Image (cartoon, rainbow, N blue to C red; front, side, top):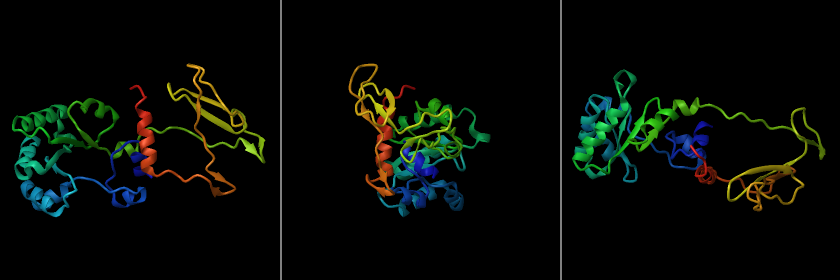
Length: 243
């Protein structure tokens, strides 16, 4: 499921209700263009959204349906005041121009009027390269297409033993393996599963085993972690990744 993998990979949340239920999280999202089009007035849409949503839902106003993003952001700030959490820019390509400059202008106009706490949320054809470009101004992103069509990590599950005897296809080393990690430098080392201890070849520190037996004879011996637990583990590991 795309939403599950996106959440585990570090996304803050998912918008689809059923997807959120499947991963045990509350769905999160912003108002839609449809709401504003039905209201035919952005101010009215902000008022209706504010009135209808529970207090725990962040007020993120979509500001580019009918007019310039700068004035849409100021309209939202005037209507929602301190309740405004963020403004969302989803400007289509035909209107976008220099999107970064548009964001900077919105940020300037909000700040000069005292709305320094209002965040800027960006969506619409966002990929990893655009995120790096926009990070100095944008506070959050809504990503869809480029998550569902992102580059894949190629991996395979291979048979390495049959009836406890080492056996694997050519090009693959046979036998059960253990993967070790250095707790200091994060270096990895692969050995046979029968190896009981390993020392980091870089720093000489004892390494910790990563792989654990979760199922034996079809029975679960270790509970599966929740998506949130996996996500926290992934984010912790990302701290050591150099960009």
